[in-house]
Image: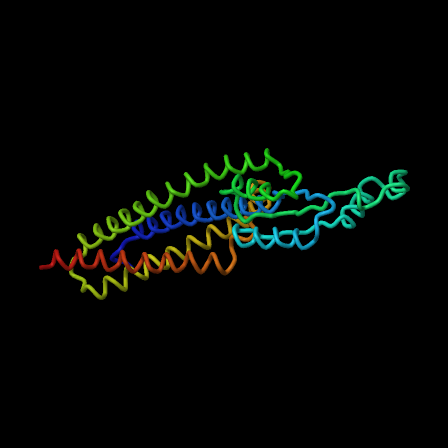
Length: 260
């Protein structure tokens, strides 16, 4: 550790801190988009006299051809009870009306919106479907935000990963130029120790800082509270372990070549 120097160690902490922060931010944005999709409902209104067998058939067809999270069949009776809740059970309309006058409906929650136009046209191809409705404004807003997030993710993946490897190898290479007499194995283990401990410290810093601003961030990124779960932590740690081993072998071999 002494051979690496405090500035090298701090450099890795800063590098990992930035990397973790961006990873957490992108994960929170991506998860928030998925939560947003759950709020977008597509309603397919079906003629009142359509047999239930036909309704069940379109449900099976939709599940077979599209990525659907949930499909709810709203019967005429269900719609009638919901109408009572909205308007009020004592309203005069319920004295002479009946559930048979209402259309049947499907409430569809898609897993993604990439093929929503095809999904709508697929539903409308059934002659017993009268109309399809959904919030166009929410869908358009989702597309705009998704395009921005995809651009950020691509930029992060291509440039961030490249910068991580270049900076890491450069830092380690400078350290080996100053201390070229260590064996390859000792340099590998020393590099693994430096990179893993600095990554662990950086992650703790990000975790504690995020806990203080969690409530403010969740206003804009509601998925943020789920970011520090076991699944995400396992993926991030696995990436850093693999990248640290790769950097350590690379830098150690570079120094080994200089010793020849």
